[in-house]
Length: 479
Image (cartoon, rainbow, N blue to C red; front, side, top):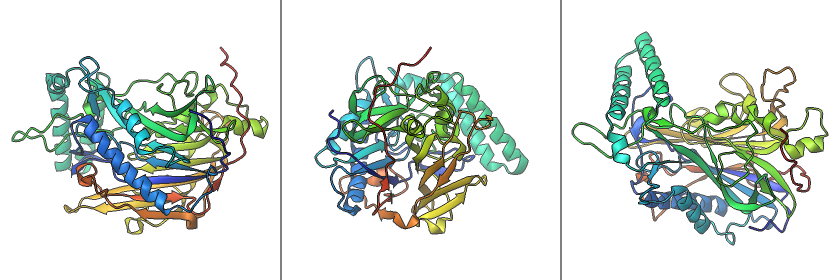
């Protein structure tokens, strides 16, 4: 892919607030879920439909934007975690008999077809996440006796938790969490939870000046809510398709000892370049949900070969820092001490499970000055709220902030650390656009929480991108 021929000077963030948690919800210890995954068993069928849902949302956003001059504004579109996944909770594929190829390749191919450069020239898409697992004999894994033991124990504890109250309910929840943690030390299968980034402007890697259109980053911390505790559709009377549950899964460990910089489009790392001119770029990091809660990018900034000293020249600090910090989530928020973006950098969160504020104010852009822990937050947020025919509530949100004072050092308690301070944008320039279900897809087969809404930050007046230096190759890591 060739670098852009013009120079982008502005940016806007577009979040697709659509619930991505399972349907058929049953009581479970929060934030865990018991329910039924939405979608198809066939990977390609499911991916095709979800790309159509995403395209419908993108086109809804695009139709509401002002006529920007070509090559001036980067539109960063972000979907929530688990936007893709299918009826089993993750795409199962067979690397031996090749019944279906790697779903990542299928998704990348379909994104290129759905969002051609000619029609979306100034767009970068962060497509939530797509969990998948390479399994030769899935049915054997799903029906293995110890898999049944895991699932029966977790379902039983969850149902007894629902029947209990007070201290006994708390005790059962402790047992449940402890059991799942022990299961993860000996998982039934390894799931790769990857976020695909597709850009018609061009993305860069760190070992050379290669420009790519698509890359992916991988989540490393498995959350207590990533998969269902059990699927209520699987009963003694009706055994629905075998699905992936919390006690079955582990994610692969990622070696971050030399930082989190991407050197290949399909490696596990999270920081890459977004080109903005023939020789200009900024650094972007995609940190998925619990990875953000566990400070993945923040605690590893000192391991990145480019991380500058605290008192370095401001131009060097700007060139070296993450400029755009993206957090796709299903049950996650911006955690101020975990922010790794530098001065004037942007932080954007798109979540598919929870609201932040009063449900009665869903759809209203709101300025928050503190989070639930009374931490200085200074963000803008918009909630989405949907109640289905069974009176089940589904929620989502987007969140935005800009960094005034950046983090320094990977440990916020380090004596040399700086306190992250944020400044919010004007709430008046946030646009909320309802999404109509796409005509070609039965939406409630794939998403239980309605068609969602588009939240556009910098809708009429896009945000200024801080000046960045000319692209120069990085010095090789030391040691």
